[in-house]
Length: 224
Image (cartoon, rainbow, N blue to C red; front, top):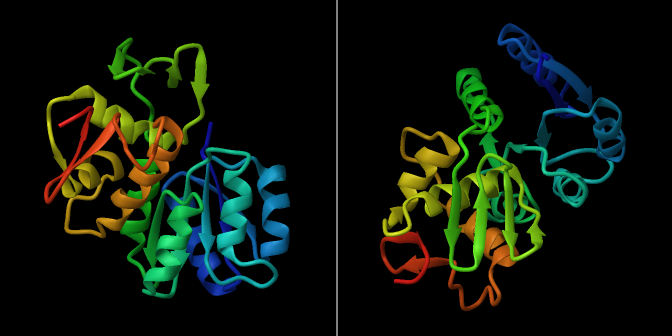
């Protein structure tokens, strides 16, 4: 099956360029140029990944992201012409997995897409962090009999930590292992996604026990 990617951007020239790049890499692009239509396009095209511009006619990309994430764990990469911190963090807090600032190198965009679409591991490992069980093969997280719904990226983040429960991961290490970054990048990606993960798996997200902070260093699975 050819991976299908929904490109939501009202800049026609840019959308066409992205389409050319995606086709050359073996992906099947679909397009939407309006925020009001983007969620319907998501339903009709059933994409494997969404490239989503922040600034759109109709509702903005942040709201589109929020609506998609409310019903689906499909990977979302935001496209932003702004380096504005508020836009970037707001997109991540509303469910985006990653973001790319325009103008961007097509190879960089493709590398981000490949990382988000890479196959899940097929080993039969079952990991435990406190009272949380991570079923790697089943791609499922449970507390007791209750399934905890995570996005694929949140699952990858928890798995990375749970596989080495005594290791402290710097934000840079997690960016490389989970996001596929091999160069200096925005560590806010890690901070916001840890917050999102904690909101789902912790009994008390303000007093985390499953994913804890090692001050000045990074994060680890379990207590200090």
